Amino acid sequence: MLYLHGIGHFHPENVITNRFLEELEIGTDEAWILERVGIRERRTVLPLDYILRTRNRDPRAAHEASLYRNAETAAAAAKMAIARAGLGPDDIGLVISGCCAPERTTPAEAATVAAELGIDAPCLDVNSACTTFGMQIDLIDRMAANRLPPFVLAVQPENFTRSIDFGDRSSAVLFGDGSTAAVLSATVKARAAFLKSSCGTNAKAWQKVMIPHSGHFCQDGHAVQGFAIRRMTESVRSLREASGNDDGRSNGGRFRFIGHQANLGALRTVCERAGIASEEHWSNVEQFGNTGAAGGSSVLSEHWEELRPGDRVAVCLVGAGLTWVHLLLAVEGKPCPGGFGKSEYLEKAIL
Image: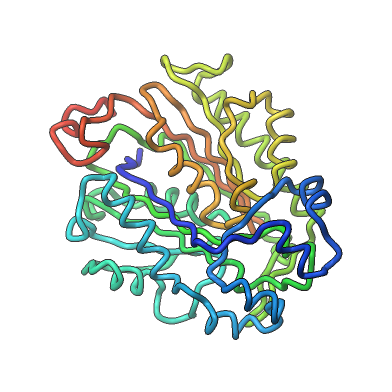
């Protein structure tokens, strides 16, 4: 069991609308985009005039043009997570970072995030593309509790648009930028905890999705979407069964499903096949597009204040590799008056 003390998210302010993509003259319009992927807007760390002028032909130039560094966007999400946990930077004993597109190969991006936050703690990266958040949870849960510090910060700074060819409509319409962070503990109790985690990799299909060194994102979209739908459907079915939930209720709360935020149509197909009602499905792909490793976790962060005792949340992620992870989050107890943080409440939490 791994306790979740706080979670945070950040999306940059520049908005890529479907109308903006029409202006790129890449053979797409809003009707085409909504029909195929259901996305209305995305956020980007890039200046819009840079995208219009260059279509991001050279991803290396995108790093120079970027309005934010990964460390800055990760720190913004982490500050929210740490505040929600009722903690300070000095309470964090380990920082783990990961995403689809790190800014550099060395040093570990976790070190740059820790420096941005003023955290003095061991740092390492765990990257697993769009499943990074889930893989980090699963890995931390597998670590010996007596060797872990009381609080671990896991961040996912995903500024994917630097790697997108905006002359290619098949990828330009999909991706946006976002960052997330979570404060976790194996020993200090909280009102929310991951009860179950499972992961896997279909390694023989690793070439289906990739970002070559200094290159653009590319994928076999048909194969990847088929894999995503099958895996998420299997995952949410198994987690719903594990939660003892057959009618949308569990322990007085609700069952919720959060999937990989890549395509609204694919998510709706999963819901139809798994019997997930629309009110049980949480998503934000329509507003932010595919934000890679920050997708599912940003949805959870947006709904953090809505979680109630008895709720169960199935987080089902897929990504390059081809990898998959599913997590079952359980919520018990009541939020303390000042929020979800470290207080007398933690000593009385049910979990």
